[in-house]
Image (tube, rainbow over all chains, first blue to last red; front, side, top):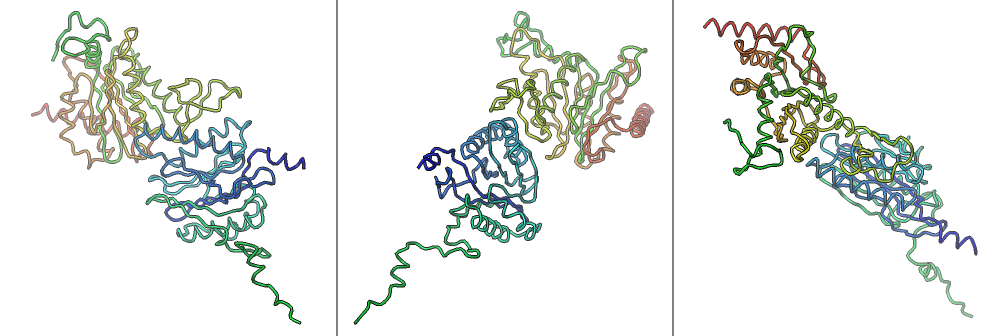
Length: 236
Length: 274
C-alpha cells in the first residue's frame, strides 16, 4: 500500500530511450514516450523531443522537470542570440548553451540531453550532453535508461553517410528494441528529422513497431481474444 | 567643413540648434590629425597598414604598435589618441574572449541557475563556444564607443578604429568612428591622408586582388599620402588576416614587408621622376 503512495509522489522521471544520428544531409532525433513516476506511467505519450530554435531540437532524458526548465532557459537565450546575430543560431552554439546551464548547475540537475540540428555552416550535427555537463560532438549518440541495450546494436549497424530513409529506419528500430527490453521506456516512437529543407516530425504508434522475440502482439481489446476463440456450445 | 559651435560645444550632452553634437565632431578632429591608417578587403582576406609618425628619434623601431590582435581571427588598427585607443582594444579583446569562453568572477560554486548576459548581470558572462563573429565584435565595440557619448561625465573617445577579421562568413572590414557609428567597408582610411588614400583605394580592383598583392598596394598608398614636408619620418606597420596566414591575424611577414616598402619607394621615385 505504502509503496504505491511513494510512487505517486515520486518525482517524474523519464526512464527513456533517446537517440540522435547524423546522416548525409542532416540529423534524425528519436525518442520513446514514457514518463514514469516510480512504477506508475504518468504519461504514455509524452514528447521528449523539444524545439530550441527553428533548426535545433533537443532530446530530453532524466528528470522531466529539470530537462524542461533547462530547455526553456536555453530557448530564451537562443532567441536573444538570434536577434542579436541577425541569423539562425548554429547547432554548436545551442549545444554550448545547454552545456553551460547543465554544468553550472550540476549539483541540482539530473538530465542527460542530446542536441541535434542543421545549420548552413556545418550541416547536420549531433551533440551529447550527459549528466555532469560534458559536451561531446558525435556522429551519433544514445541516451537514457534504454540506451544501455543499444550500445552493441549501434556498434554493429552504424555507418557514416546514410540516406534519410536509412537513418530514420535505424532510429525507429533502435528505439523499439530498447522499448522491448527497458521497462522504463515505452509507448510510441517519435522522430524529428532536420535538414536544410526544414523539420519533419514523424510518429510511430505502438502497434506499427516491429516486435522482438517473445513479445506479444498488440491487441486493441482483450475481448477480441474472447470472441475469436470461443468454443462451440456443447450440444447433447 | 570646419565650424565651431560657440556655446553649444561645452558638453557632449548638448545639441546645437542645427542638431549637431559638437563634442563628437571635435573628437573626430583629433582622429583627423593622426597618421594615416589604410585597410582593404581583398578576395582572400584583409590587409591593414598604418603610417606611424615617429615622435622622437630615440624611439625603438617597432615600438608604439598601432595595430593590435583582438582575437585569433581579427585585429584592430587605431588612429587618434593612443591612450584612448588602448582602452578600446582592451575592451574588444575582452568582448571577444568572453563571447567564446566562460568567465566567472565568482570562482566558487555560487553560480546561479541563470547565467545571464554580461549586459544584465556583469557577474557571469554568456558563452557561445565559438569565435565571436566579426560583425558582432564590431557592433559591440561601436556600442561601447557610443556609450561614452551619452553621459556628461564621460568624454568621447578621441580615436577611430578599423576592425579587420576573417570568420566563417569570410573576410570583413568595419570602421568605427568616435561617434559610435560602425559601417562595413571594402576599403577604409582614417587620419591625415585619408582623402588621398580613399581616392587611391577606389582605383584598385579589390575583388580580384590577393592579400599578397594587397600588401604591396597598401604600402604604396601610405608612402604616397605621406607628406614629406609637414611630417618628417614615419614607420610603416602592416598586418593581415587571410588564407595565407591561415585565417590568423598577424604582422605581415618580414620579407613581404620589405618587398612592399621597396616597391612603394620605387613607385614614389617613379612619380617624382615625372
